[in-house]
Structure formats: C-alpha cells, structure tokens
Amino acid sequence: MHPIPAPAGHRIKNKEMIDPFMFFPDLGRIEKMEFAVHEHLGLLWAKLTGLI
Image (tube, rainbow, N blue to C red; front, side, top):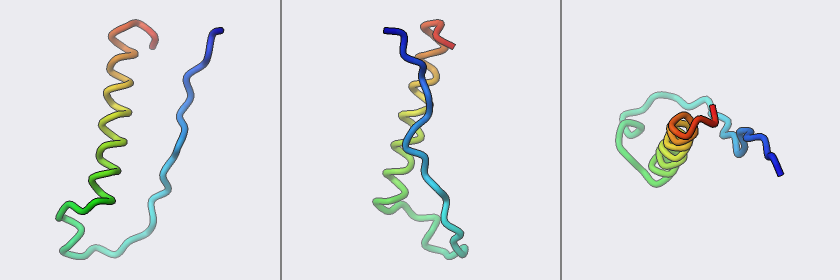
C-alpha cells in the first residue's frame, strides 16, 4: 500500500463579532489549538522523515 496523505476534518470559520471574551481561552478554542498543533507537528515530522 502507498497511501497519499490528504487533509481531512476541515473546520469552517464562522463569522464572529469581536468581543472581549474571544481573547480568553475556552474549551472550543483550546480544542482548535490542539488540532492546529497536531497538524503542524505532523507536517514537521513528514519533513524530517523526508516524506515531503
């Protein structure tokens, strides 16, 4: 097998009004940050191992 990596699980950004509470972490934003960190670590690993 030779799978081809492809992005999945896209998140669509809702149009939100800017409010003071958006600068404080909540569960939803922490979860989005976790997904972003996971994706960036995966890209870094792929570059280090020569897959990209």
